[in-house]
Image (cartoon, rainbow, N blue to C red; front, side):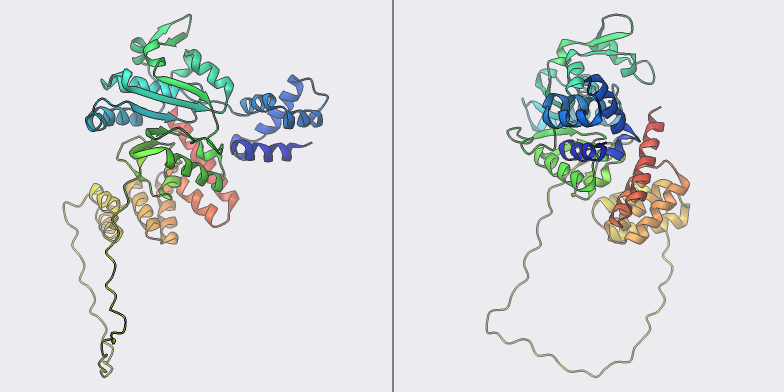
Length: 409
């Protein structure tokens, strides 16, 4: 059986790590497609797969199981829509807001963004959303714009009355005004020419894609996304993915319940140090007698400011004042005790300062208090990967995904 060869092809062609798709997913798709195409066996199907582009697409569609719904990440969508209406719009009078959604699956996410913008009173005539996915089957459903009850999770969605029309029992279709501002296309983020001719986007939605890639492919994908972002643009990712972007200089935006980041402009370089003119003599060094070693006095305990808050520690960290953030966080820990939010922040600060061992300890303490803390799990997975422990990294990523699924229920 050529399962290993097909898994290798799947990873090279689509960037998908077979283990991330779930146990036995590739083997099941292989057996199903061999039966659907009436091949005499797996070996015959493997030969067909390697030489038939249409069948390659069918196989990818069978492997990828879309899991999405309308307003899946509502806090991020609402925050992005407010940003467009209140900040981006005044800075771009008369401009059209351009967004990229990759992958777009069956269309719920790009349509949700258009609806969120409309609810924020942003004219849909000034919205252009390019929605890209590798699955042609998913794109066909997205273009049709017709959705059943499974696309609506949680409480009864009020947005349905304003933006959708019933087209049968338990079925609704997105109105033309929303559909008109979303353009769907087949594409692969990892294709060499993916970014060619696209220009730049004011926002990118790329949720829960990077977790299916290995680390080199993740870095490659982030670099592509980075090239596509306009200065000051926002990017939305899944709960387990911000750490991957932190490594590329992205910073988290303060959106409760949402995972939005941006890339701040680079800080101005420090002025070069003055270099003495060539031929000048170095300043004389005066010899001095060695002084006896003096033990410095013990520092007095520092009083914790009564107005110190977690938000202040976060501000110091965001400003790059890591030493001050660490000290303030330690004071807060001493005064108020441990909380998952404070322990996680101290872990991120330690990691940014290069103290990996201390960071790992704080991440584990975070999980002790909050076992389903998806970001702590993601950071620990990345650290395990750096240590060469692929098995531990995989287990931690799977825990993060399970925690994410439990949050969505």
